[in-house]
Length: 91
Image 1: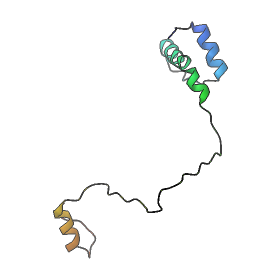
Image 2 (image 1 turned 120 degrees about the vertical axis):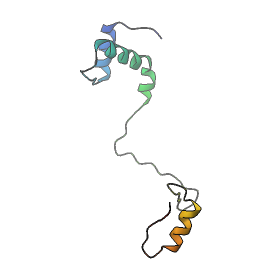
Image 3 (image 1 turned 60 degrees about the vertical axis):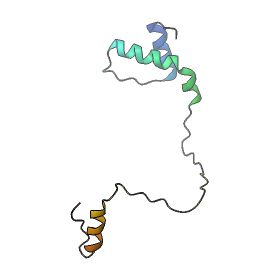
Image 4 (image 1 turned 90 degrees about the vertical axis):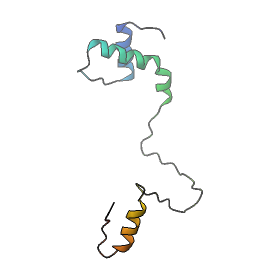
């Protein structure tokens, strides 16, 4: 992609209204603005719609359940035998 001059990149940043961190070095700022400039076509296609809602049609109303981790057979046995206190032992 074509490198733009610092002046052109600053004009670009002002036109698009970018707020860029002041702690960046001049080289980092230039690199960031060049990257944004190179992909400005993609930026123009992105839009923000405040309050926009979208309906998603579900295939079924069945809830999905997935365990966070797999229990070992020892844990399952322990869980079944210690139902009274609700604690897992030997895991």
